[in-house]
Amino acid sequence: MLDETNENITENTAETQNPYLSQNETDAQDTVNQESTSSEAPSFSPIPEEPVKKSSNKVVIGVVIGAVVAALLLLVAVLAFTGVFSNKKATVLKALGATFTESGDYLKEVYGTEQYEGIFDSKEYTIDSEFDTDYYGLGIDVSMMQKEEARSMHISADMMGVEMAANIYTDDKEIVIELPEMIDYLLTINRETMDSDIQNLVEMGMLDQETVDELVALNEGTDEDAISEEAYEKFQKELMDTLKNFYNACEMKKGDSKELTVNGKNVNCKGYVLVITSEDTADFVENLKVVYQDNEECLKSISSLYESSNLDSLSDLDSLYEKFDEAVEELRDMEDETAEIEFYLYSGKVAQIYFEGYDDAYIEWNIEGGNFPLENTSFTYEDEFGDRFVIERRGSCEDDKYQARYEAVNEYDESVAFEIQYKKNKGDFSLEILEDGDSFILIDGNIDKSDDNTVDVDIDTLEMDGESVLSGKISIANICDDIKRPTGEEKEMLLLSEDEWTQVVMDIVESFY
Image (cartoon, rainbow, N blue to C red):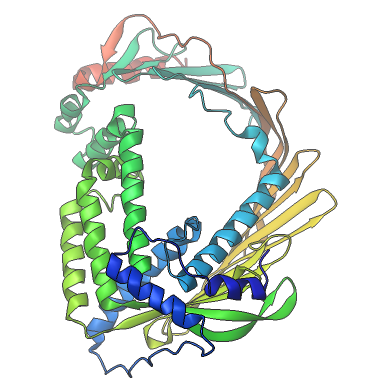
């Protein structure tokens, strides 16, 4: 753990070679480093008073820079310290890395996650689950199996002696559905011709075009060839490089110190200010567009996974590129507009991140520490009207029991909270979701890694609104037996006529009598 003295030494140490800087930039940076070791404190040119801007410009810069701030908080926070940034930037980056790394290491130990690492490396698994409900003696069994070449699912339900079952098989070429208690034939879908076959249902009025597009996208999204690991890694690297270059282009200057609460004490925290100009942001948005254009297939594959949840913002890339161009044009027309992100560090870790936008809107993230840096933390957003949205985490550890509470409160003081308790040595856990202080969902159970291949999760009770709903057991194993395709008479369901569909429905209904 770094103290204030070590931090000062870090700031005054000359930087090693920076692969992201040209020779001229490196020479200029060496000059700065030499000046910082002199007896005089380094001086900074004051930022001139900003001229009054049109409100439309303020909205654009606020929206775009706000998005950049979010990206910095999410992505820069997990960058490893590589020595490629200037001293002040390296100090902040190293503190961010320590804040997240120490927190992650502590939670890994609390929950014993290391024992589960690699359990699915073989890409084969079997999940068996059995649930008993308090509704008419309903019992539900679900079994899922996956191998690299095929997947299968078995679902069965027994209610008051009436049994229903479904077997689903899928591979890269087809989907097969078996309903053994209802019909004596199989329903199949040809995945290779699904795009054209499914239009038959549109023509009969059974599906609308929007639903069809989502199903086609989902079918493509489940195809392992839709996105290769190599393509995804290339996209990640280019995105990270773009962010690194943006962070390196921005100025980091010394800021005022601030007294904050860390580990239950009021302490003096050193301040650093990241200055983001409209020109820096324009370059970042322009470079981000290039990364997207170079990785369109990867983006479309990622987007297809979310379209069924109406999260298809990446599906219309041409429209997105136009928005990028509009933002870049607006940003380059601005006269040295700047935004500042303030970082406050204590003992080599981050204690607060603060960003103030226009019209007194601001974001404040307080990292208050505890057993680990992020154990007690709060994130506040306040808009120009004074309305606040707050997310807060509070945690503690007593004996072998760890407990944490996450709570979100909106501007109307409506709250949703999530509480977890876990006993390290026994595996007992409790999860509870509360709305405005009242319990909405409660789960009590136990998790146990019975051997090297299997994890067992026992659910003693699941309650909703104070009423018991079900209990059961889930067993997860990283082994899988042979997956068998159902056999029998087949009907290709996307090519059935309206009369044939009517007969299928009638056959299912008659099976209940």
